[in-house]
Amino acid sequence: MNVLFFFFIFFFITLISKIQAKPHIVNSLPGYDGHLPFTLETGYVGVGEKEEVQLFYYFIESERDVQNDPLMLWLTGGPGCSAFSGLVFEIGPVTFDTSDTNSGLDVPKLKLNPYSWTKQFSSSRKLQKETIDLYRIVQRANEPLREYLQRFNQEKISIQDCDVGTTIQAYRQGLVATIIFLDSPVGTGFSYATTYDAYYSDDDLQSAHIYDFLRKWLVDHPKFRRNTFYVAGDSYSGLIVPMVVLEILNGNELEHQPKINLKGYVLGNPTTTDYSEIMNSQIKYFHRVSLLSDELYQLAEVSCNGDYFNADESNTKCLLAHRAISEATSSLDKAHVLEHNCVYVSPKPTKKFQSRENQMKDDNNINSHYLGDQKLQYLFCRNQDFLLSYTWADDSRVREALNIREGSIDRWVRCNGSISYKGYLHNAFEYHQNFTKKYLQALIYSGDQDSLVSYVGTLEWINQLQITITEDWRPWFVDGQIAGYVTEFGSFPYQYHLVYATIKGAGHTAPEYKPRESLAMIDRWFSLSLL
Image (cartoon, rainbow, N blue to C red):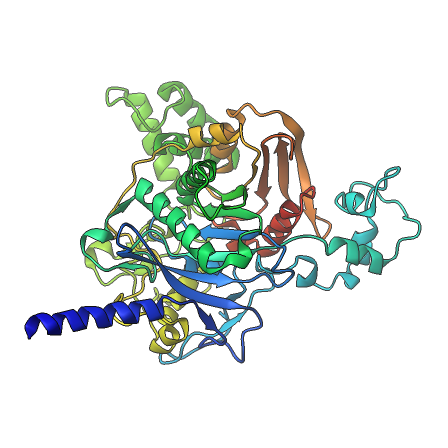
């Protein structure tokens, strides 16, 4: 009797899981007025030997040409930060309406993000009003309109037989993406495991699970198998994305089915080298942007012999210089050195104040009471917006709309620093070295106000790849203004092609700070245009 009862319960749970595993189309979301003007699908894909790990995803179709636009997988950093953070704070089609003052009982309001990477750059703003910039281009002999449209602000010249309508139509050939936002590794966001042991993950296991996820997802979505495919992410994903790319390359060579039509990868302010190298480049960055005096920097450089992080305990001068540097920079917002260094109130006295840098690693101690000192009310605190995601994702109406499995997780955490995870890979440089022998495209970008993973260190390891520079450091433009600087390496499609771009004024998660410029960058890069 008991055996039959438990068998029935097991069968019932398995049946429910199979039913709920089917993709779920979300037509409306709590906090957003009306039907969603884009296609949103959510669901789970089981991975692992017995599919004991259930990875949750948000799938959003391109609003341009879903049949031909690229398919992109987005992985948020951490490890342990939900893909929803990348969706709602960086590149997705909705974001929180921070101008709306909700009571604590209401679900936070959502609004459309005009700079989503699922939208056309040209349709994100009425180009008919940009007639001056549209005509400020260079025309070269026998060069089609598409080519010289990319060279804004270099020369003023009239263009015969070209009107604004023709220009807009040509510019609209840029591409945007259909995006899968994946909660990975297990324990992140709404992803969960059916056994205690399955909650453990590491870099190797995570990349294997992601590859397993992609193959199964494409089996369920066969119409996207022909779309060009890119793996993308920022921050800690700088270590995971290359591992996933290699998994795909190896799987394709072994003729695993379905074959993934991999074309390249995208990385923003990516963790790539050893932690000590990142910290050493951070000090160089502080000096370059005038946060350290020449005297202090030179003292540290001479005393520490260029290695500020691994100082010998007997090297007193180096230790003193390093301490002085720490005192000079400890109160900065490391994710964006020009913004206020805001703090949260935590329920635990031992962690009363938590900076954004630490909070990026662990959001578990956050609560809904933001620091309320009236003396600080004039400060702009970007972190305050993160609180909205907790209230929203934990609302029962939201979970019902997203088709979240009841009882799968308790409290949703934006960045879960308590996951059982081991980071084995400390340096992904060799992955990029191997990719230079493949016919891949790579876009690597840096918010130039980020000191956590600064552009200084990123440029150092890119230059160590020793790829031929095809276009040296130059400005790139949006709306007639310098949006950053770009260098191109290699020559697509004949060899590995890497585009490195800085985004002026952006921080660690660049699209969060400069959404319009970030959209222009990805739109042009996808369409193989010059930035």
